[in-house]
Length: 245
Image 1 (tube, helix red, strand yellow):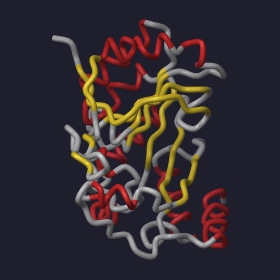
Image 2 (cartoon, rainbow, N blue to C red):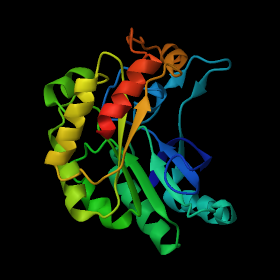
Image 3 (spheres, rainbow, N blue to C red):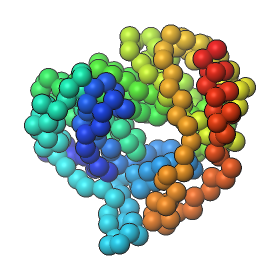
Image 4 (spheres, helix red, strand yellow):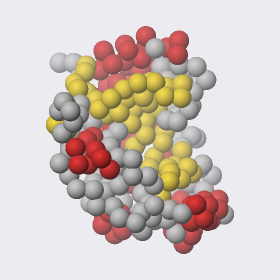
């Protein structure tokens, strides 16, 4: 039986989710429950009906082969070292279908990238199939990570360590959220955490908190609980400077 994927959306995006112009696939489902999530409709694996006008279901189902064929057809647009990026939600929630898609992409000569929260225990199995890997690190402290996302960071830490050992290329991303992980002390702790995992050489991209997804929480029938999470320009600059060392 053909593997199928639950997809939130897909389309072209330039130089944001991997190198070059890319065919970006936002996959449905996430194992974390970050209250600042900009795409809350992506959290349930099989989607959610959103209270829009008219109401709409958040995801569609597509065969792996059909999705990869869409990317093949878009090859003339994949300039600058571009390819396909699987992001989320959390792409590893559909692990076997994702593996099948990556294998087919490699067979068709398509550059592959995933952006992941690094929580799946078998994530390293996919490393040989990924040309460009982006891993999020939301907190260096496991208890704080559990408090904010519903899950500790133990498996994330092990996967970050494995990525540092097994890969030459790795981009780390930190969603920087006021009241969660945004102080100068937090930045220093992230640097120490990455160094302990053998990742001091890896580029780190901080992502500044925004509330653009707040209306979608209401449309999904969920409460947006983040308060006072915005960073001042000075606070953002101080965090970035401390992260750079």
